[in-house]
Length: 371
Image (tube, rainbow, N blue to C red):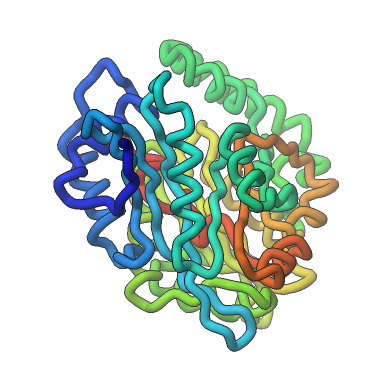
């Protein structure tokens, strides 16, 4: 008989092997750094809770054939303290004699003691399993947004993911984008999204800040959401430190946006490399200021040489993205499950804060190869 039980330290080598075969190059052995990281991320770090543990599926032969990675997220709904669980890596070894292993893993996870459960990386099959278990897909949280800044560099970056040799065309792409920018000087908004006139008139100010400075801005910028994270200082410091270590994505940029008088307007966190697609992890804005903050983000990325921007939506940003030459795609769904209907309804009515730092993409499994 197969069984499901909490992850133990002795399970990590088998889980790492399963992770390598499922998400990376199964023809190569997993790097030792990946084993070290998975042990820390799912067993020892500040976002772990032994009461809401990651789970392994043990096949009838006694080996590990499935895994669901779980991290905890303290939240609050008004004055009510909550424990949320984030379902990260869900993987199952293909076995004809046990096709329901994935469903049993997910059912066991959802039956845990947490008040609310999430995933922001559910593929079509996972989404179907969640909804069959009374989970709900959240379309307004499930879109990736893309904004092209340098068209030639953007196309070259896409092509290089299939054939790295096309990077030899970088000089040509840069020259073509300089030509295109020259043709757009009369309407700078079409190029970067931020009119140069704003800076000349002393408009919104973008200032690069450190981890601690960014952490201090989160509470005032999230107060508008009745259902929101309630991190401890240790947890938030851990998440921001992890979020900054994504060498495949480039340099981490933590920035604040303020008015001419110095009043806080918003903040953003993204990773960028010149000539490549920048990855946006978090955009925060006061009510009514989302468009201005997005414009500042696009302008900052353009100044740093980014080919474009890609990030995950939140409902508070969607309306402001319309009219800013933003395209949308849906590589995965954000899903939520709770036995408390009020909590699910908070997300259905866009009153909850999730994705980005309150999600899965802050960890180093996205953006680092562990070679």
